[in-house]
Amino acid sequence: MPTPSFLADFRPQPLSDLFAADPARAEDLAFDLAGIRFDFSKTHLSRDLIDRLDPMPYGAALASLLAGEVVNATEGRAAEHPAERGTGSPDAVALAGQRRHRMRALIDAIEAGAFGDITGILHIGIGGSALGPALLVDALGRTERRYKVEILSNIDGQSVDAALARLDPATTLVAIASKTFTTAETLRNADAALAWLEEAGVEDPYGRLIALTAAPERALEFGIDETRILPFAPSVGGRYSLWSAIGFPAALALGMDAFEQLLEGAAMVDEHVAEAAPQANVPLLAAIADLLYTQQLKAETRAVFAYDDRLSLLPSYLQQLVMESNGKSAGIDGQPAGGHTSAILWGGTGTDAQHAVFQLLHQGTHLVPVEFVAVAAQGDEQDPAHHRELLLNCFAQGAALMAGRSSDDLHRDYPGNRPSTTILLDDLDPTSLGALIAFYEHRTFAEAVLLGINPFDQFGVELGKEMARAIDDPETRSAFDPSTRALIEKAGL
Image: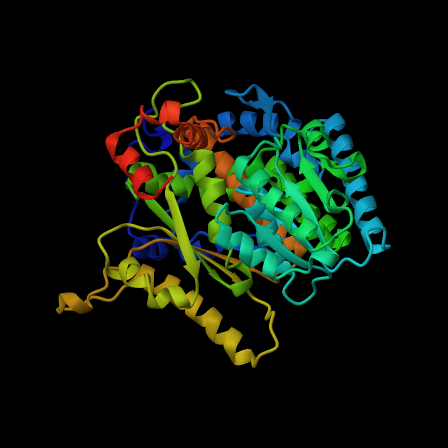
């Protein structure tokens, strides 16, 4: 798979030259969508580059996605997460709405006391089944959370102990989130939660279980009553599933109305990409910039820094969304990719990161496109000087990366011309968070289309799991390499 043709002979100009040549650049490459400002002016995007793109392939792929057609070619299925927020085939949208009413009814029953006095929920999942709910609850539920929520994903017993210690078994519900209801880590942790309930003397431990799954029949076999199974479509991928029943702990903790507002914010972005011209399609523009850096300028990573502590889980969430979707070595045609696909995504929280990794960003030898995510409205009760200084730091970092500062002393020389995007939310609420996450989903999809890869499968996660099962079997263990066998012996396994 060669470099996309629209990038083939493009040579970006220095950022300072781009601003000098276009006095209106700061306005021309800044876009407002769903209460969010997306400022691409400090990237090497230019109108010349944008106009080189043939929008037809992307437009056709986007239309197929939003219509609920088959876009996951390797697995022969649609990717129907947009249907969860109202965009897709009429049948899929209607079914998603019915399932959301079912979730609301269960939440109403919990609030009405059908499960007794409930104060908390233990949500057990892994990957997208945990990262999405964790992000939602942490970002939106720090000040107004109706129930205590603990997210348990790691099979490590230390994680299990810590999560259970923060909950009261007498007043806790357990949600088991697994698309297939076969995920080994999730089911092992579910068994631990059941044992915890039983040891605490809970009369009907299985009566405290709720299943969030695309395989309801397996949840029934596990022992969960049909009335407490919240299904979602098999065509909703795990890392795109927070809009579905997987979002149940957020809907319970924040309220179903807040969850509906989250969906409405995402729907605004669905509508935007469906209607916007390519030159104003915000996720598409972000994807073009991403490919400029990975394909043309050979940047191997992209960094995301949240200048709002409520978004501290955003980089972790995006790591799975971006790298599990586009971290592929084969094109959709089954041929080798032949070059970089996804960037390696990493990041942190400002201003802590400024005193840790920004040395490399300003003076290191790696080209790292940076993304700053901030919120204009103050969301805390401290002196406004805190929030003011936080935002000033955020904006100053982008300015410094671009401008640099020359010095005869190489130790104090800042080369500049280092790109950044700033994403500024008016406020952090369910609507804007829904729009922000949907923006990243559509950006990831657009990048995949331009690269000619499938963002909706994830075969790369399967080999290690298969080998973990084989290692545990003495009959197949002998086939492993001497180092692995020695480690197993040393650990006493």
